[in-house]
Length: 128
Image (cartoon, rainbow, N blue to C red; front, side, top):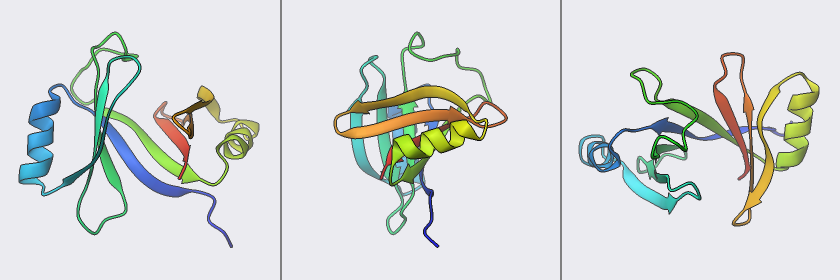
């Protein structure tokens, strides 16, 4: 049986990207795997513990780009799953009653889409 979904990474919202990056690198021993500035002027940094396949993504934005203001306990941004065919996985989930948050789009060769779980936590699907 082929696995349809594979957990790839989880993203958390941070208030101070530099301080959070220092914590996860220097205290937790994680290494930076990728960095990017997002179209809405937000930034993210991917981190991984050596030997692990999963990543932690630190997400920072200027507030306007976020759907809600920061408040303690609201830092879980989303979880991500890699799939072979993003659009097919999205259509399958929506056909099962899963609510779409962001329809499929293609940026820099990566197709990604977000759906919501029952508690409105966003789940990102991406080609991985």
